[in-house]
Length: 608
Image (cartoon, rainbow, N blue to C red; front, side, top):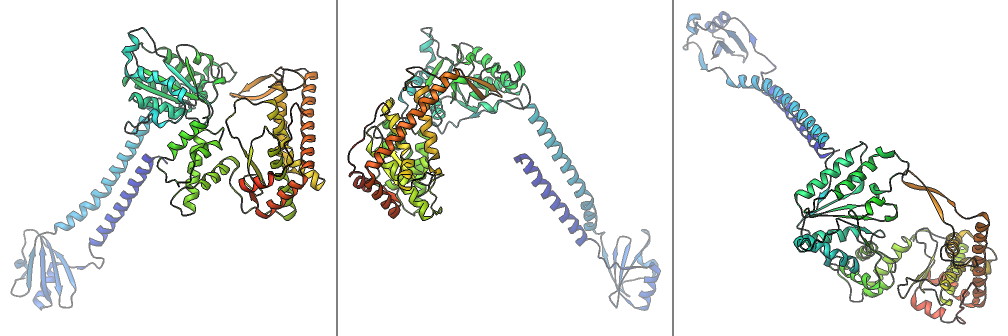
């Protein structure tokens, strides 16, 4: 329910209560239900002569007589007549003269005017609400953009990392501050800047920082807010948004999730009359129709730059593209410093260690980790956040929440222990793999157990040997099950899925197979409703069969390697599984003690 409707209902309820209260008040203060007996004035005169009347009250033409037995009699006289005309005098009875009761008149008036006034008020509220609805309908095509609070400015100092992106946007800020400097040389600043990159890397925060640095109005909205069920509303809102920005120029407009309306046209959905395409057309027109002296910069963000319409990306529109990537180790430390700025940290907390163990995570992920660590510390009633809280938070973000209430049977627990021990031993034995930091048979998320391997450095280039050894490690759990129990379970289903995906990428994308350095598996997208609904292979049946054969060979060679390593390290496998059954979780010290007894590394390359 909208605030307007809620307020109207509250008013009606209050007025109803007041109306009922007034009616009750009128009833209570009105004439008594035991009404006096009405007689003729001659009857009262007779009783006065007989001495049975003790008091007479005269109110205008109304005469109220009280008898000795406290009974009231009422009579009425002519206005021109007096009591003496009927032989009633003050020496025979007590006479009290009163003015007509004005209270009764007011009670009568209130009983009439109050309901009438309430009716008028209700009609006024209904008219006002209808007028508001009509106004809302007339403003349906207005922009819903929000203007950032100038008191809460965000600057580049609040954005950790993203050095290259900030350098790209620094000249945008300078143009907004001193446009004459550029115009003097005939330079034109880009009218649109497209920020693209994975989710959570800081595109929206960086756009706010541009407006904050330039100290100009900042309009922000999502692209989906343009589109409504009525055709033409989106285009109308675009026009209204740009008009508002021009009136307060210099200004920054930020459109988040641009792909919601900026997808490539001509996909067969709705033709040229589609509401989304009309909105996109209006954006294109507004961006290319800027006056040369209008200092309005359009910033837009998307995770899918590949699906945007080419007209959006041509010079004169979003002709500058700023790529944002996940932060490296140094940038992760800076991001953690920002998010822990106002949080009490223990002296043992090492942000560098946290950054080292979180490769590939974006700024939003790191913020989530810091928040989860603070929640864990508060749950334990501690005043400071400790390093163990961050470690638990990293595991929760990466693997899911711990399911301590999930109880496994002894046999199932033993299978999981050998399964995870197999992963850990192979992860330590092969040189290209990341260091094993934790092994646990405590359920997290959908996994019954987990082996946590963390890299010592960020790697952009992955050699073929690392892919091959990762497949060997993924198959290590299943190999341990078969070696010890002479059977396999469904616990390795996710491992097989990941291993197969790596092997297929090696063959079709990276050219790391006997088929040679060629990219295979090109696909032709079939788009419907703005989404890729399917694909079909561009390879022949013969090549498709060769791809499947190469994938099978890679998996088979890795399977043999995993079995060979575990047979060699069978004693370590038994010791680790037994210790896991005892402690449930093994970390750095325990792992160094056990894995330090391996008989050596088992290097592999070329699928050996």
